[in-house]
Image: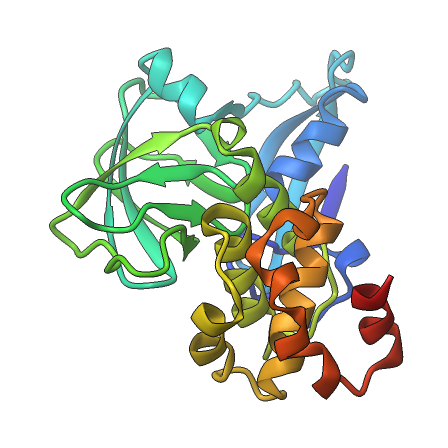
Length: 269
């Protein structure tokens, strides 16, 4: 059985409605429990994954044997089990490089969930995965895996190529996990979504107020006040109580400038 889905992991499917794109991790989490096994995963289609599945109870047919199954692992589980070795290092403000090497000669798919936390050291910002991640390991030897991230700390510099980061579970940082999970599934316009998501992360993780967010917000092609307001509203949609945050105390600095009545009403209730 073949399945094609628009990619989530690298942003190439961002122009597609959210309910028409899925990450490899999302697809496997649905199809494996339904009784299907992954036997091929292809990336040659522009912006799309192609999955080939077989039924777990299929014993083959005359002249056709069952295919070998490609194992899939969560990155932290695979590290813990000794299946892979990973070194994470800086690669700019929106990506990290994971140098990954399998320790057993079998094909495998490695994934991690959006919100996976990368802990830095030496005065550099921690980073948060802004998308689910996936890499297919079909050969021995080290492989470079570029993953999409956002800064966790507003005032700290991003990790550079020589800086190492430790991979932590998304569940250890629930606020940033919830924000990134929300944005991965939204249909916010791709020209403003990265800025709004970054602001929402700083509201959630650092309790940043309007004055601290305004300069970064000005990078979006919409008014600064609207950008900050959207970030605050999305933070609330992620289950975070923004009425106890500084951004709520600062709402008189941006709400009067809002022309969207629905957005304005959110802050007046």
